[in-house]
Image (cartoon, rainbow, N blue to C red; front, top):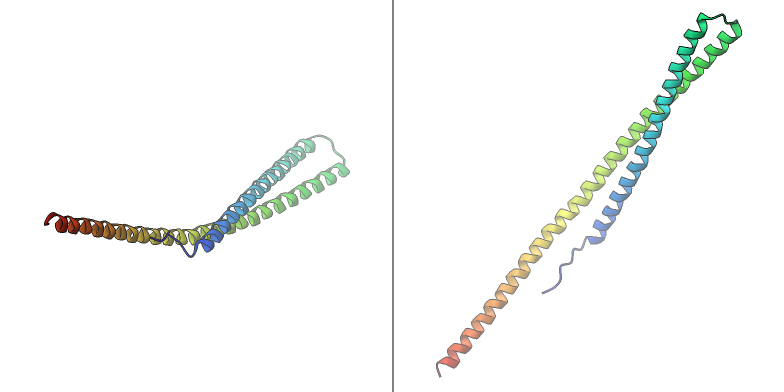
Length: 152
């Protein structure tokens, strides 16, 4: 009997490769998101420290130049925090897109895997049936030879 041959094996292999690429892309985006989270947390921490320093320095005698410089620093740190949070939101969207891409690639591969398994089972049944017919033919032939040879 012929060997099992799934005609779409090359397509299945390509889909497997696309799924692996999607996994790698998701992993890269997750690492970048983690860096963005750390960047946003650091910016928030700098802002909190700047506000803490502003309240503690306002209690002491400060000149106007120091107050203006400190206010400018707080404003700059607030902008940095805002930018970091916006970048984090964007990165989260990209991560979601990569997750969706991975889910789509996995689904497409699984469709072909299930099709291959169905074809494999059908082929195995066909082979088993052919082997059963062959055994039956051999048994009938042996029985016929015994019947012919036994009656003489």
